[in-house]
Image 1: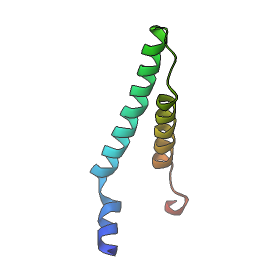
Image 2: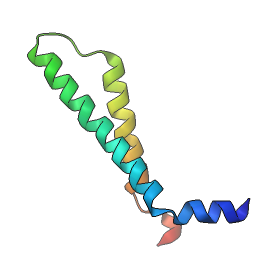
Image 3: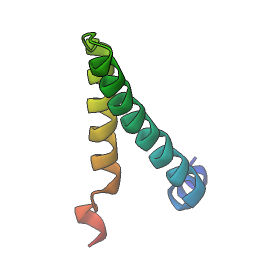
Length: 69
């Protein structure tokens, strides 16, 4: 199990895919909100929640760990 965790910590492509998916989620929620506002409709709370959660996830992933300083 420890060997598997070490492989996951060093896997750069997995990290990049997670960051890309979270980034796409943020962009799509912003664009969806803009499109709905231009159409005169209100923004569903789920779009706001998804965008906020994705921004929080990106902040957590991109912030340097205090243990690795």
